[in-house]
Image 1 (tube, rainbow, N blue to C red):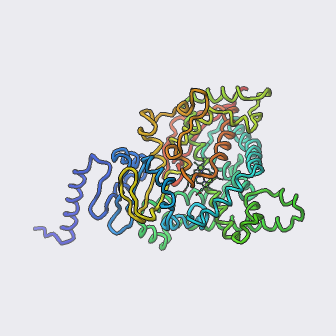
Image 2 (tube, helix red, strand yellow):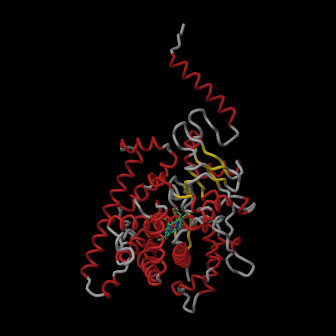
Image 3 (cartoon, rainbow, N blue to C red):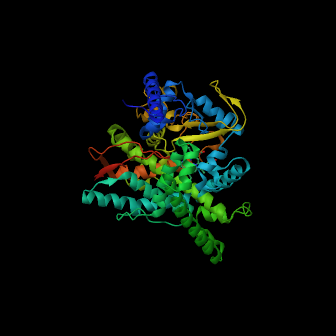
Length: 502
Ligand code: HEM
């Protein structure tokens, strides 16, 4: 006769409980297990995380409490209700900060604007706002990008066309935006975008860090802390990435300082234009601006500008390639707005502003595929949200930007359709949609500072490519979302380009 030990009996009982729970909950996407809470469902659905969260939100009427394992401190309120989002981001802005846990998760970005609250955040915001407002700064961004498009992007695509080879557009966009962001922020061009596609350790490190940071959101704190202590898995990559980032940042800060000191005249100094230089010469910030401050600010901006624009361009080009009618309308619009010479370069900055249909198409891509996938806030004091949900002090609130673009209540029954026309008024202008509904750039006082820069850059790059090439998707290449803080395509965007006869 077989005699069962205590261990076997325990396993059998747990298995029976698990089967019973699974049977009871198999038709609901959100199952709450004893002890483990909702974590198993979350872990099982990581490969399609954003669709999973959207499905639950739809089923739960737009707001639900995610409950993590016992004692894991993982409980958080998840909402896609625009009234709740307006309340958190604007109406009760003072009550909802990033909180200490956000700072712990994003420790690699130091005391920069992303993780800061209260006075430190106000200081960063005012400083950056004044730098971003300078017309010379916009002109510099415009010129830098234009040069990069002409000297690197178009020659690379020409080469691919002549050789008939496939190109991974996602990789191209990440390299392009890394080069242009480094040029604008640090004043140096790492030249990642070229036919040879050299590997850049820092560019690679950013991708790895963004992936690791997402895992810190979905794993219990004690688990990722243990992984960090043991230096295993994504935590190891995060540490290595941070070291590479530090090395590059401190090197560039030191080079910039040397250049500044060696230039004698004001004209000399202004020749070395970069955001670092603007910050180093800012009279009001003199006392706070040390190397650590510069490192944190520059790395926050590099992360803000590089991956987001690259991700938006990737999804935008995939959407355009799968919607030939949209491509035709964009080309028609560019043609109608060109001055006599018939060259896309003649679209001076005001010309780009006139590209309403292109603007609408980019907005539509950002709605369906927001580069930053979710926002994380923490309540200072207890509160009640407009949906009626009670929030205790220190509750973490997530609002997934990716779900908010796919809610019928906000965008109507055809919310999953790529339809630029929904953005265009009868008079032919862009319809303004409040940012707590069109949330890709966040809302309220913490709205993205780079919104208008981003639209300009995306429109410049899109117009340059679409005017010169037709994009053919490589047949059979899988398109799916990667799992990262930034909405990447898991396998990149493989295309072949055909030069247009203009
Ligand atoms: C398509 C491109 C972009 C998208 C979708 C985007 C989106 C966002 C979002 C969602 C936030 C809120 C983040 C948070 O609070 O955690 C944010 C903040 C911010 N973004 Fe962007 N961003 C883009 C490009 C840029 C660029 C090019 C820059 C500047 C070079 C920039 C600078 C900033 C800054 C400084 C903040 C912090 C604002 C604050 O906390 O007060 N962004 N962005």
